[in-house]
Image 1 (spheres, helix red, strand yellow):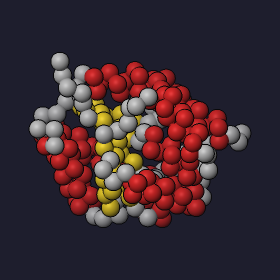
Image 2 (spheres, helix red, strand yellow):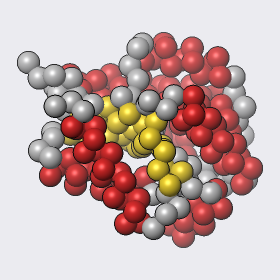
Image 3 (cartoon, helix red, strand yellow):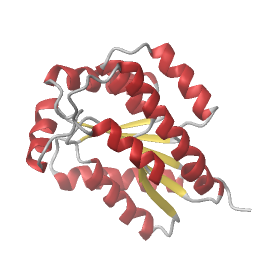
Image 4 (cartoon, one colour):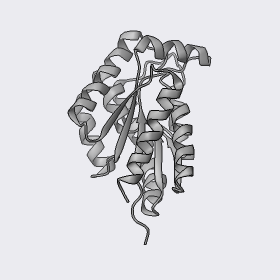
Length: 211
């Protein structure tokens, strides 16, 4: 029977290059002969992607903070139990663009939702499942938002004020300081070659640690 795969998440505010580094990490794992999947949150399954669309689409109707939080965890429950856990149980590694650390950062830090409330839902939906490693791509908010604007039309979250994203970044960094054994903070403001080299180095380390 295959050993359980590694669950690795990529976190960060807008425009820090998560998509680029997920592709880079994928190339590294391929070179190491690791079987893996790449997925994202919110999303990752057809139903969860439909919830993602609900969450990200700009709308005139104000979205209550609790509604947003519950939708995030509804998508996560579907994603976790129909895609992530089956892959891990088959021995595949899972590379995921955001997970629950993002909820603590965005809904907790950004929106001001109670951390205890988020933690209750985390336990309800995930049990004891947590990422094995979190790669936090960190860059100044202004740098990330400039990159996000260059991508095109902004979604509902990207339209928030700079102060919203500063609270998110601060929360991510606080969480990284609190659990340094789980978090690897990467300077996403550095030249792309340096960022990619560091992420590849981390993937190789995670692999060698299992040998």
